Image (cartoon, rainbow, N blue to C red; front, side):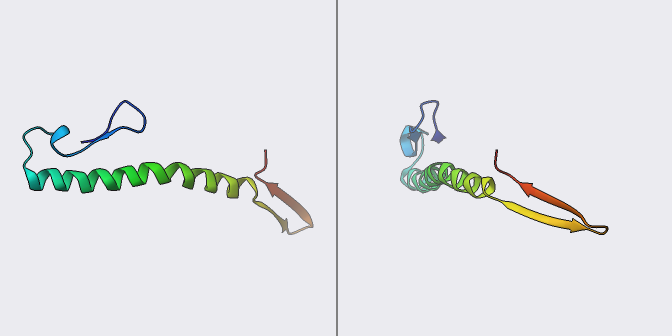
Length: 74
């Protein structure tokens, strides 16, 4: 059950496990749906997080007047 070697193709239910009964197949479908959702949203979340990380800028001072500027922009 789950992700296949083909991007975007998932297996669930009796296709994934031929001997599965109705309840097992239904449970497999629910599990696969959750995994598919996680797979589809993880790329969007990673892109959004990278965008935020790329825009982080801050500065701080140390005793003696030494000042640091930090930016995550490339």
